[in-house]
Length: 117
Image: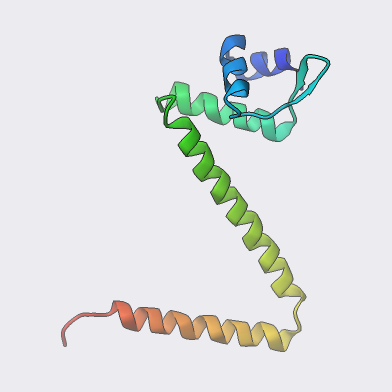
C-alpha cells in the first residue's frame, strides 16, 4: 500500500505518519522517495492510531507499548514453532513431555498451596 493510501485507510495526517516513520515505530520500504507499506505495516499504523486517538496513550509510552507487543508476538511465534516441533516428535516422546509437564504442574500447585490444615 502506498503512503497516501495508508493515510486514507487509517484516517490519519501525513505529518503524523511521517513522524511515526522517523521514530521507527513503522518501518515501510522506501523506494525512490516513496513509502510502501505491507499488511503488517498497515496493521501497526492502525494500532498506533488506536493507541493514540482512541485509548489516549501519550507519545512517550507508545515505544514502550510497541516493544512489549513485539515481544508478545515474538513469543507467540516461538511457541507456535515449538508446538509444531513437538507434533513432529514420535508419540512416545510427546507422551514423555506431557508427563513431565503435568508433573511440573502438580509441583507448582503443591508449592502454591500454603493453606493451614
